[in-house]
Amino acid sequence: MQRYLDYNATCPTLDVALEAMAEAARHASGNPSSMHWAGRSARRVLDDARDKIARYLNVESGSLVFTAGGTEANNMAIFGCLSLAKKGKVVVSAIEHPSVLETITYWCERLGHELCLVRPQKNGQVDADTFCAQLDEHAVMACMMWANNESGVIQPVQQVVQACKQLSVPVLVDGVQALGKMQVDIGALDADFISFSAHKIGGPKGVGVLAIRRGVQLETWALGGGQERGRRSGTENVPAVAGFAAALGVLNFSDTAAVRDGFEEKLLLKMPDVTIHGSGVERVSNTSMFTVPGMDGETLLMQLDLAGFAVASGSACSSGKREPSHVLQAMGVDDRAARSSLRVSFGAEHTTDDAQALVDELVRIRGLLKHMAGL
Ligand code: PLP
Picture (tube, rainbow, N blue to C red):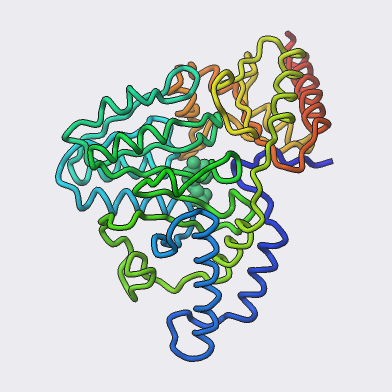
């Protein structure tokens, strides 16, 4: 039996999204910029999807720029903001997704901005006061994610956005992992930039959106035909946007806390030496990141894979080298423990039986690996 427990990496695409995509691809395959009937019908589907997405997100439809996913949305905000700013300081949490951290580092170096990384506390949450204390008169941009993709820990974005507003510092909130996993009021947050990705909520891969607050200045990212109000040229991917709108339309905040918490309880009963990262602080309800001492996370992942469980490990592969997770490192977890970590992320369909089966399998694998190592 196969169990997919890696929802933070991506979700299975929902039938409603697939149907909306097929419908748009079949019946609205014109270029939305064309003036004839075929173009007009594609434009109608695009405008309708844009209006729906804006309504669901509680933002103005004119604030939305469709992108090729969360990565591009973050890149667009960072480049667009920093290339217009006078030289200054960029304040960023050290646990951001690479699409923020790598991009900020690159543009800070290229444009001569100072990069100020704010580490989280041991529990994985960035302290709002510590972060805001860095927002002085030199600050030209701030970035904080709403929920962390590895630990699931919810970050104090409300306080940070408010502080940035008072100081007129543009702020990017990466909302990719928050949507559908917690109650979010995007309109009330009123960040300058907020990014989302369709495939994290059951929509298609390769489409996302950047919501830009009215009046915020942004250097143009992609030049060309002037689509998306001149902010991102290129013919819009109408079927993907229609699929995104359809997935958002059925998005219910699914509380998976009972399954996740049950999993952690059972795991700690069977393996009391396991450390759960971010427990004791507010997390999205589907995510569990933990260290199994003495075990290599990648080996555990592969053994679980053989048994039909798809989970993620606490290390990332970059240029063929396995690097321990920068999130765990920033939380003060040593490299050895970080390499012994796994991330499980549940979806709405999972039950306590799935949680129990995973615990049983982890216990079996650990026993097996210990036996093989002669321990
Ligand atoms: N931001 C966060 C927090 C993410 O978890 C991810 C994807 O894992 C992204 C951004 C990038 O989104 P995409 O895969 O749509 O480029």
